[in-house]
Length: 165
Image 1: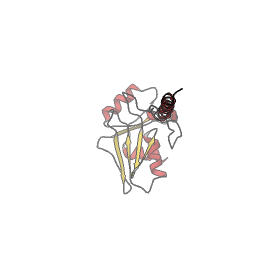
Image 2: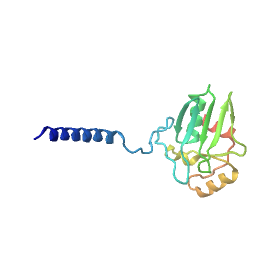
Image 3: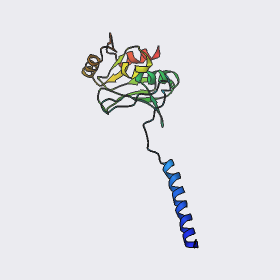
């Protein structure tokens, strides 16, 4: 075997080894499936037609929760001394309801309505939600009557009280 052939094979083997290592390091990115920090149930991912993930922002920190109830409860316990912003999935895909607490006072856009029906945390993303309007709430409750028996629209103050229990 000539030295050129030997060298060519070593270079080729080196390229193949480097490619194999690189290919393993560049795996396709899949949606994360983490547990909710509050209820410990796997966070339900957004779908093409409905947002499900709730986000609490605390300074530069971004924490994902399964539902608005879980995020509000943690904000009222673990982060009670801090200003926070919660982005709660709404009836409008891609348009979360922004709930803020600054100086101890909670705020949400005018017309915001919540549903809070006690149920298993396996489906809390369906039973604890925010809506941009009463009309959005009504449409959601009508579509999900079986999971939302006796649902009543709640104000932000009422929703915060539910999460504080």
